[in-house]
Length: 334
Image (tube, rainbow, N blue to C red; front, side):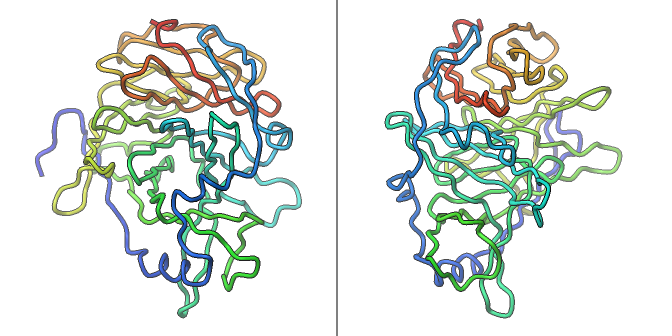
């Protein structure tokens, strides 16, 4: 296969084959409700003030989610008035295992939201089950029906909004839903690999652009901090060759400690965090020529999102008692 410049022998191999497990899961629950979950938002957030020179508007969660030490926000993607967020679960003392990752659908207009557990569907001896999706979930792309969740060195996982399942009070399931009413099973995965002599790309965060997915690497010290793009089909899935491979194209490197990145035309915007007590930064420019905008975001900015045709960037912050969804002005950064 001929590779475009900058790919450096990088691959993504699509792995699917979960249709039977998905169908079995739907058959022993209330079934697939898809976007109907957006009509059943059970938690109430609020408009809020958040620090940061570029912040125009902000929203926050209820008190339980603002202070929670188990769940930490990471990825962000926006469609209309709905913001989708990923969280990963830290394992607390006494926990038998990790609860994995979840997606939150937050309606900005009503300030109502709901958490949906991300799971792997299983089928053992004909019996349907679920397992927590144990990923850091550092980035999210919501494109069409598909939601892509970053899985760091492993690549990323893909789910379909139409596969959201509502659980019954007593489901005949193997596995634990940890009290969640809705689960979203992943339907496929894109596994990262590289040719001999090349270093596998880390999918620390994701964002969507004009016909592409932007990928980047969080890095401290001497580790690579590459920024790359993956071409997307109109339905939001990566463009693949006949063997099922997608090819990331490396476009350059960004600053250390990147948490999220978007590309608007040829201009890049990158967030970096400086701990729980210092405001975050946004870097603008292009690989090899970034300028830092200090104190642009609240403490702990994570992933970035951009809606084409708007002058707004979106981020979410992760630290307890300092958790906001933020709309930021591109003009303030440019």
